[in-house]
Image (cartoon, rainbow over all chains, first blue to last red; front, top):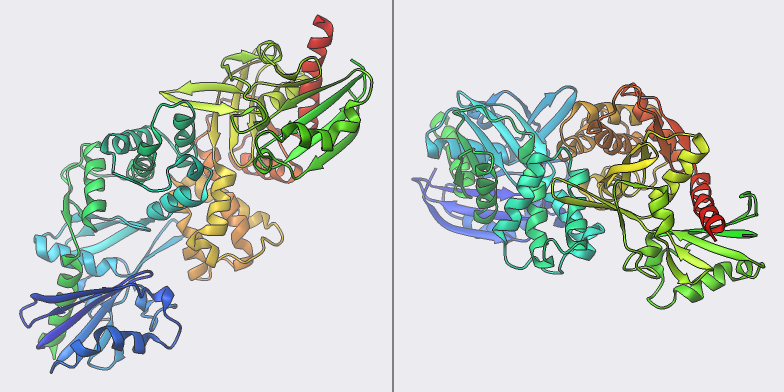
Length: 297
Length: 297
């Protein structure tokens, strides 16, 4: 393989990177062409418009992860069942164009009769573990639908989804609290964020703690400008409240700079240390999968 | 007092009843003129349009409860601090027109540095306790912002708000789950509701359990038509999960027929028996307050 086009195609965004024969990122691109913006049948055209020039490189291959493999995506890539290791995922690619463009499958697991799913995070996790040289970890991927993932001996044992980012957006934009909150989030207020996290960790349900945004404003206990950060702390703290983190566990947070920083701070309030990693995890994961193809070819 | 005009003026609705000299309801009216639909300064005109004819009765007096006493209402009626009994509430009316129209104050309490508030529920609670002949109870008022209220020796000791109805509406209308749910709620599915309640009672956070609406649909484990009832069970079950109900506690649910029935069913899944009461609680509460004025006059 002379060149890998690594693509992370999610619900609301499309990102790609061109990697050289040693796995180094040569160039990155991002488009607001998440799968929700692409009509059925138009995936090849959008792909061409975004990455067609990259694909003209002799021997170029593309691997894609994320919601592009869902029913609403380019082609449905059947889930791998947990526990699942790197080999299972790398061995179950769905080829869109044989030998040149493939989709990495997502994972599914089940707890107490409740299925759970991920698409894209598995690739980030395997990439991060490789970069960090870890075989066992608790991996956190914050976002619209945060994932908490237990990895043992390099295999993803189980995971749980938390609709944290989405609850924040719902409360921020559409709830009665939005009338109390300022129109713009403004500067991040770390003291108010910590206050929200602490409140949530001591609480028992966001259904109740969320109401404090309203009452603290009503009694002028928090200035309006601090409320978005406080609410962010409440929802992230609610997510953290219910996690079991055994002593000695390596905790890895994968995501954007700003969000992983908030989670690292929030976890510190539970006396849990964590390391952070960014988008390089995705490219490393796709690169590792690509290498298995080359070596087995 | 020859006639009481009892008014429940909330955020999104306005209801009134005309009671005779013995407290019997002669006539009821409802309008979609919640305080959010009334501009500042226009409360007297809206009141006149809705109840002006009733007020012409010789000796008629009007008592109002609900958000009409908030900053956004007709006039702000300062909160009574808990613990508060019927006498405190009845003794702190805010007169809008002296001797003829008054607003019943709401209540405030505080747990662990977090204030909580109610407006209107205090009147329903005192009315219900009178009708049921109770002095001690755990009173539940389900709704957009549900209240759980501890009453001892006829006094409201403390209460907590849960944004249950609002979370349901947010998830139903604005979240990613809304894409999975049918456009209309359709028939109530009690088995799916119970399944949602049970899931929530066994769970630890709605942030996680709410995602099961999506995954159960994704794997065809629940038909789309059952999902609204299942989601309703999830949010109500989340509210119930965190309540402490000591053995022997009298539990009273006050609200609409449909909603109190759901809560009664959900509580039964926790082996808690509860009795239900409807809007008569409001009229009984306002009537009882009116009687204290007449007797002290």
